[in-house]
Image 1 (cartoon, rainbow, N blue to C red):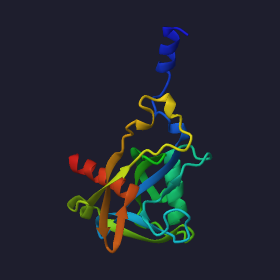
Image 2 (cartoon, helix red, strand yellow):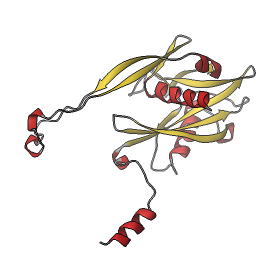
Image 3 (tube, one colour):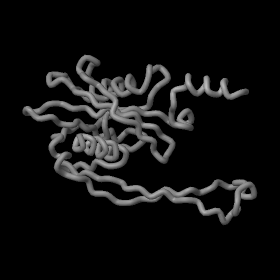
Image 4 (cartoon, one colour):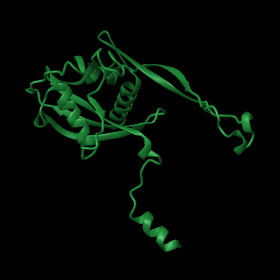
Length: 206
């Protein structure tokens, strides 16, 4: 293989996150809805019957299925399924950003606006309740935060003899902040709070 072949391959390739093909892919929608003349963000409380993270606050969203044309379609589909709305009830959907979690997940986030007259009817199999919070609240109230560490722990049988310093190798622990919003008796934290905080920071900058 020569230089020209390599250059041609690179020119026709869309850069992506290295290792993304092995990650679990999810898509979420940050849904806005107007109430009393003010924009609110809508949140869900996951049903207690859910296998993963029951009772936690989140945005509508879920896994990107093979049948989805892409993350955007998955985000809108999940919002329709969980909120009982139809496609035409969600307007002006646009991409916000992609979050790569340290736990092998890629989360594609979008914003969208739910029509004020949309007939929202939650899916009880996935959602216990919904609530909205004025956007102005997040613009004027910063989250609290607490640091956590993610450490590397090699599995039994790891080939220490193949790496410099063997068992004395200094694995790096990654520390990052976990954010918490306390709103109307609910706690918004985890990936939901992380995406929300980033979104609010973008609004404040621009």
